[in-house]
Every structure is written in structure tokens, then in C-alpha cells.
Image (tube, rainbow, N blue to C red; front, side):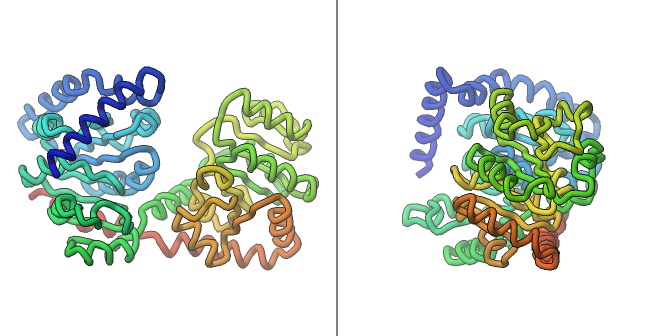
Length: 419
């Protein structure tokens, strides 16, 4: 199986090299790793040459979504163990490009491809004291090198499903690696039960660290005076990470709610052409955030956010949230909105997301298939403030009662500090 795995890695690399000819993402993946070992060697050889080098904690995430799950653990680890150096690696360009300047880590790099040679060289240069992999990241050559050197390994926020290769008839080699991991922190009991069925018991049900992250964001408000001015005294509906079908629903909803409700829309794609098209559809009733300082925010009915990095803070101004993506490949982050204690709406494609299913079952999130359903459901809330408050409280409670995964994980990892 190891030969097949390594052959698969080689084929994957060749396909990426070919894709780099026409795919910007594949090109960034390939060229972002050029000279990587030379950079690592220069930094970490000098580090380990110190008389008492700081121990290194290595955190690895596939991309941006996994980073958001690992972030609470990284930041809590730094607070608990300030004497450690933190190395953060990414597999994908979307993660690396967004977080290469992240201040919570001392160094941020791409992870070299998982060949036996790369894994051996990387671990030899870095010399981590322990390694933490987030969610789905199981690179078996890296794991083997860590195991050989008896470096503690942890997997956090993991989810397992019956259709994964670990649970197939040919999955014995993969399961052997899981058994050697010091502790696998899973999000739910279903994952733990699956692992127990194949005699993997180094498992802790910790929950999902994303709940800690959104709760943390909620409790660290940013001052956004223009948005506060736009929202002042009005009921606000916030559309997060919206696509054209989502925007059409929100614009249709506004024709019913009139000037009693204001809309903040954060498109998933922030580009000039799309933003202009969206503003045109609002027929003169929209203001772009970049132009809001000189605009009449009192008269505007739509505020279009044409910059990145604000969405998770904007929900604090909203009374109802609409999350985009449900008419495409799948909805975006619902927890960021629910953390503020507001009802959440989204399109029909949400079944892949456990929290969306749970919130729907608990009556704090609502799937709609067309504008008529959205208008009917939202109007019911607007006409019944008591109902809106009840559902809002339940939404906030859904998030608050599921925090704590970070503390569980850190307690276990900290047992190995200094070993």
C-alpha cells in the first residue's frame, strides 16, 4: 500500500505541473514551493544553532477553512506557552496567500509535497517538538517520519465518515497510521464510534473549534462607525457571501419590506464588475462601503460591502442573516451569524454541513427554495418581535453551548510540553 500511495503522490505532482500551464491556482501551488527548502534551512539552522533554541510547535492546515478551525488552538497555545516558536504550514495557495502574514505564528510556509524524501528533509530541518494537523490532513510520509522520531502528533477538529478509505477493506495500512497518532480530537460522537469500530481508541470527542472561533470574534467587536450609522434605528438583514441568485432574493425581499428594513450585502466575489452590476440592480438605493463616507446613509436601503475581512463583524448589526451559496455548491459559514443570536436563512443546498442541519432541526435556521418562501418567513419574523427574540436567543445558545473544544485540546497537548 505504501508503494501505491507514493505512486499516487507522484502522479498527483505530475498532474499539478501540467495544470500549472493554464490554472493560476496550480501555478501558485507549484511556484510557491520554489526554493522552499533553502528558506527553511536558512531560518531553522540558525534557530537551532542558538544555545537554547525555543521548542517548535508545528501546526498544519490544508487551506483557509481548516485554518479557521485551527486558529483558536494556535492562539490559545501561544498564550499558554509563550516560549515556543510556532510554525504554520498550508497545503493550498488560498490558505497560504490569505495568511502568510498571520501574526499568530512566527513563520508561515507552504508544506512540501508528501514524498518520503521531502518528509524526511522537512522534519530534519524543522525538528518540531510536536505536530498538529487540522481536520482532514493525513500525509502518511510525514506521519511516518514523525513516528520514527517519536515526535507527538495530534489531529484536531477531525470528522470521519463511513465512505472514507480508513473504513474500507483495503484501509488497514491507513488505520495503522491513525493508531499511532497520540490523540485524535473529533467533532462528534459518530466519528468516535466509527473509529472505535475498527479498534482505534486514541480518540477524544472535543467538539468543533469553529464554535470557539466565532464566539471569540463576537466578543472582540471592531469599531465600524459607517456601518453603525447606516444601521441606526432600523431592522437590518445581512447577506453574507452572496452569489447572484442570493442577491436576487434579497432585492425581491426589499420590495416587500420597504424602507422599514435595511440590507447589508457582502458578495462572495469582490470585484469591480460584479459590485457595479449588483449596485445597478438595487436601482439607486445602494451605497458602496468604499463611498459611504460621502453618501447619504440615512436614505440608502442597501449597503454593499466592497472590501474583504469585515463579514464576521457585520452580523452584530443585523437582526436576521441570509447566508449565500445555497443555490450553488453549498452554503458558506452559518456559525459566524448564529454566534450573534440571530435567525439564519439560506438556500436549499445545505445538507453537507452538520451545523446547518442541526440549526434547521432546532428551528433557528431556515432553508428557502425561492423568493416567495424567503419573503413569507422573514415577514413572519418582522411582524412578530416576540417570535424573533425567541429564535434569536435559541440561535445564540446553539453556539454558546458548543464552545470549549479548544480547552479540551490544549489540556491534552500541554501534557507533552517539555517532554
